[in-house]
Image 1 (spheres, rainbow, N blue to C red):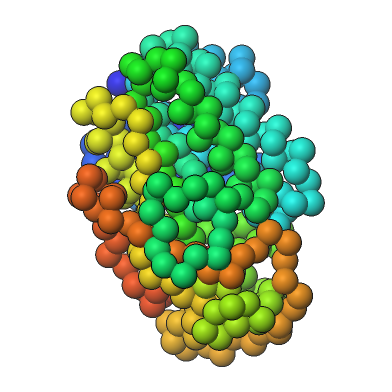
Image 2 (image 1 turned 135 degrees about the vertical axis):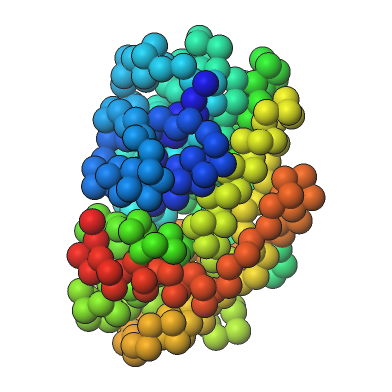
Length: 335
């Protein structure tokens, strides 16, 4: 039996594929390469030493999803596929609702029809809204400030209703905080299309000379230095959280929800300073107006994942910046 990883050529997906293979899982990737590149698959094969099966497919097409299940013996799905930028979702909300909801619905419909019952969902801390001056726990109420966050909330609600209707499903909803970093090899990392929407890939592109300066969106937030505070988590720590969740589902655990974060907040300026230390390069920045949908501060209480999954983060913010720089400096133009 195999694990289907939708969006498995993407940033988080590709790192998770490596961790799954290392843990002994058979993996099939499905990706349309809208926010990723086929070169990623070659590098995953190189790093894993395995001939990983990848299906290029548009998961908004239910027939394409059915074909994947008909041609492969799949019992579990880790669902990453979807659009993922908070700011962009404010500008093109209908695209976000269409893509993110349709892909999830199609995968779940086909799973139900084919008897696959283990589902790990790539959710987000954006469902909590903010600001929060202490680590948020999984029972914190929804407070969503962007269409992107609402798509995650809607899918979580769909999963709850699905489980009520059919408790043969085992579902893990993983609420990510802010993944950064890269694989230690420097062979895979974050390579956003166009102008990066997230802080650290933008900082890395400034460091490597692709961009002139980092835009700091707001310095008047209610935080220690006025810039937004987030819980940054190394993408490898995050990937290992998915392996732990899949192991949990194998025990017929029902519906579970976990925060995946470090439990510590870092400001935008903290991250820039850490990247300067990791790279030895001065990072110029300019303060710009706030972006729609951004909040002051949020960080995780990851205690439940540690207690129930035996998972906790290992990497520091300096480690994350070091590994990002290793990726970017070895791949200045990305893949």
